[in-house]
Image (tube, rainbow, N blue to C red; front, side, top):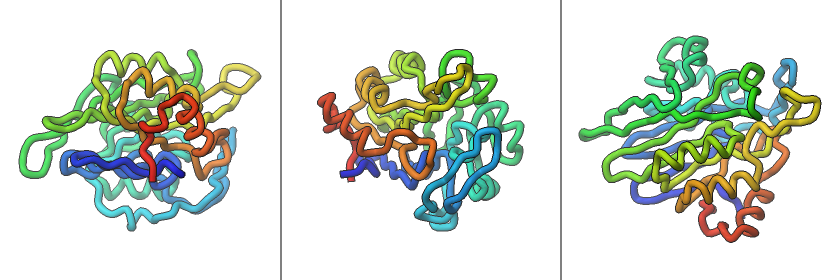
Length: 255
């Protein structure tokens, strides 16, 4: 059984592939880290390999009100088709440095900065940027800036979107500030040498995703960022098994 979507009366999220998730919240349609390319290799100091085509095209995703982009510097979080998609989006929320690189409708947020998005029919939802640490302490100059997001609104569940984060200290900060009810956790256990000769953990692995769920006390968790890329060292079944073993399998959103 796979984890693919979570739905309630006021919140729905569906993983397309990798870290790309469609979120419907408070009457708004949001998209995380857009990636719509076909399988292929992306050049660079550490080439990345997409192992499967996106199951949908950008056109098939349809209209979104805003993109929540954890960072723009890695192809698995913003690929070529995803970058083109941003030109059609009225607002992209991302890091301060990323907004400077992207231009257009991109707006940069510092950690804990907020922005209100108007809801159809009145009112608004609040998007709060959170810290995210894409590797061990001291890795930021190498991996770049990353943020996560918390969504809040009147009569709506509190939703945490982790972005590419490997730090449980960051998760603890979120848990201290918000009573998170729904969480979208990027996992996959990406491991690459960053500041040491041996591989560093750059995203949550299955065990840290379990611990993050305990810290947040989230009632439901959607796992993303575990498929379609060669550098993910743990897949979805591995993550599901860790949750089941920890007695938290009932909190996973399952298809």
